[in-house]
Image 1 (tube, helix red, strand yellow):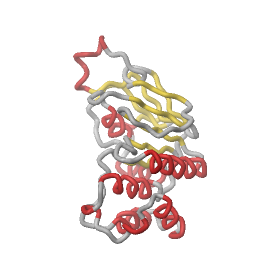
Image 2 (cartoon, rainbow, N blue to C red; image 1 turned 90 degrees about the horizontal axis):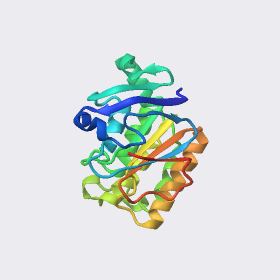
Image 3 (cartoon, rainbow, N blue to C red; image 1 turned 45 degrees about the vertical axis):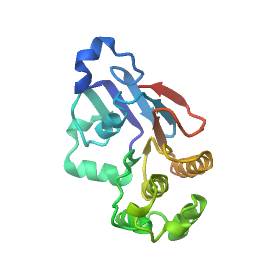
Image 4 (cartoon, rainbow, N blue to C red; image 1 turned 90 degrees about the vertical axis):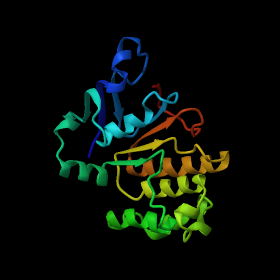
Length: 217
């Protein structure tokens, strides 16, 4: 269980030549995300928003500085540590979603829920599908759904596990205001239930939530 995610002087390698010109609340700063807090990371396109998520989730290492879970550098984590972290401490709704296009919406969700030994009861999954207006799409192959519908499926999938921190990378880029509101309510209800921290990223449109801190990337 993690209480904090700490960044110390982190900078993507691609920005090294711009180091002296960087003006960011995240890059080259001492920053701490705390469990139970809600954050918004606002960014212009190309400023490293998705890279930040990839660094924290251990998928990329092309950065300088230090990222730590509590006081343990992620560079010290073994493969087994990462597996456990992604199963029980860190969850993410990727900007590009990373759903299986050949599977149905329900199958995409159930793969995750089965991996976490039925963390969410089926009635809860059905309720979320209803609230997000995709109940009639359960048996539809993901590749035949709109991107906005896929975003809603990806949200449900991201909640099918225990987590200390949930990252939502541009979660409502293709949603109308009403579905954005519902998504925000579902996401925050589950986060509060788990006492988790939530980090939302945006390059413009973002969920209207009572953020504890807004950071400019």
